[in-house]
Length: 405
Image 1 (cartoon, helix red, strand yellow):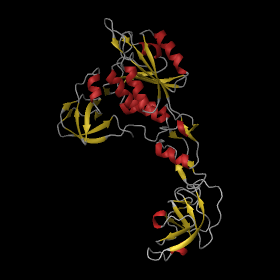
Image 2 (cartoon, one colour):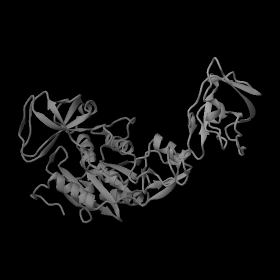
Image 3 (cartoon, one colour):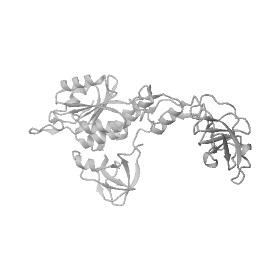
Image 4 (cartoon, helix red, strand yellow):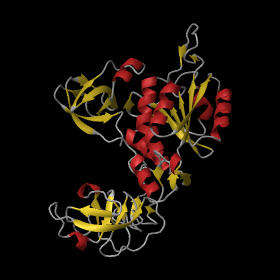
């Protein structure tokens, strides 16, 4: 359990503790209409070829290619038209040599036909057609399986399903797909001073920004987020709220009540069930983590900037693990810093910043209450624990807040 005077925990050690306690959610099979943004749980292999049959790529005439080898505008080939085939035709007869059949785009090519002559090369005749240009074997015929053959891999496990993947699955005849479900995240803010946005404030009261901030971050990460109203600084009330929410949560995030104050309700309520301690980072030093009835519980600091950065560093990797994603930790990229600043030794500094095309600059002050600066930032400059100064022109590591990875 947490105690005064304890050493700080390195950021990477705290993250390792979290990831060791979290595993992907059990898979579920859902309709394609519900699968957008979810992660495929197992490889999906084509049961049928795509296209399922040879079909026409053009509106025109199906022919035996050798019948039109000598066609020219000056000496067109005349062929009798023995029928027509539309898309969706159920049965078709073999095409006899020396004849043509009118065919629509997507319609099955009749057995025996070796090319489709487009309308533009003909007089569009109904009983007899004049063909003015030769065709090559296979021209304008989409072969069965030329896109995907039966047994081919459609999407691999770990794929995040986007519109194009879903279109492929639908085209290949898959109506449902096995995925990792969308994680259910419950967000709880603590503090007797908190009031709902839109409500008037009394003396010493503030609006609850954290639950909206964290719930939005969870939704942006692909989770279903449930925002619980703020809980007063009373351990019994907090525990009652927590127990009420456990049954509908795959992960719970609280903010506030984890520092060293007299009214740190979360630590008081859960000190015997979670780990609490200081992590060597700024902002976001006081942290807590553990499981309650098998559900991961993150107790984040109460200052909004600290809570948001803690979410990005610790909660987001856990969410992505629940989703079954391959990459769970924000990648870092190099950028040139246009403005110098100092950094405290022994802590990993996460500096709000504006990034654009390889250049980055700090945004605003260091205060962990400064929501305006957080909203103006699109990145964090990640300063290593041993670095005490970043100079203008230095290359730094940057975490992009809005980047999909």
